[in-house]
Image 1 (tube, rainbow, N blue to C red):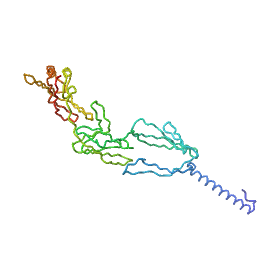
Image 2 (cartoon, rainbow, N blue to C red; image 1 turned 180 degrees about the vertical axis):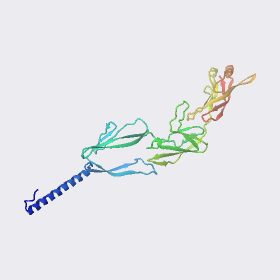
Image 3 (tube, rainbow, N blue to C red; image 1 turned 45 degrees about the horizontal axis):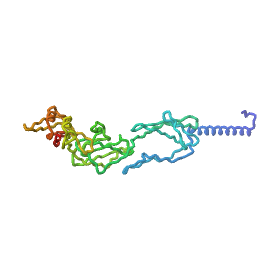
Image 4 (cartoon, rainbow, N blue to C red; image 1 turned 180 degrees about the horizontal axis):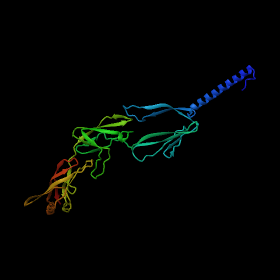
Length: 337
């Protein structure tokens, strides 16, 4: 503007207008800068209360803990949630639904990315990681009147705490030792069980004390008690018999002497380590000895020489069980039929 030919009043008016324009420009700049402060911030129109417990299962004596907070969501747009190559379906509230069928036991880690479009049009990505524990479905059923362990052998036991991964469970044993070594039956097959316990002393109860790491806190449970008994002495059998009559052809066909535990439910096997056969006639007594469970050729000859009505006496029978303790078994007396 040229103010030379203008009256003073007009000049003042023009200058006032310029001042107003400058102030308006300043205001617009400030407004623009202010709006850009949160231009990329998300706008939410719904608030929801959220409760996330550390665990829905709490044992007596432990502490229940949960996170409680407010969650803000935008109902005008849905997020895109991907786990690997899979895009998760969303429910009505915009929450992703993740489902998987595990094929093995243990701790499983999974995660993905949540993508949400910002107000400025850019895609914002938020990675997440979580984990869960896969356990084997089981029912715990314990005999309360038959809580027995046998001295000198490894007794298999199964220890579990509902809702706790097996790798977070440990045990301590009083009056015995324990290991995770599998116990085999007489057929070489493994007994079921996560631990084996070998009692130290007969007549004193074994205590199995279980501890579990639950939500980062180690918790010890009340001990389980087991009575300790000795393994019963087995019976020696020849041709499936320990007394009575036996046909000569049956006796001749036998390979040796074996030890059994009749009416004993624990699957154990004794090994005969030696025995003697006594043969008597008018010439006197003749004894032939074996240092294993099998008949020697000399013992077979004695049996072949026996006639009907003669007594087949098998004595000095020695056997060793899984506890390694040698035992002397009662003699077998059979009459040749």
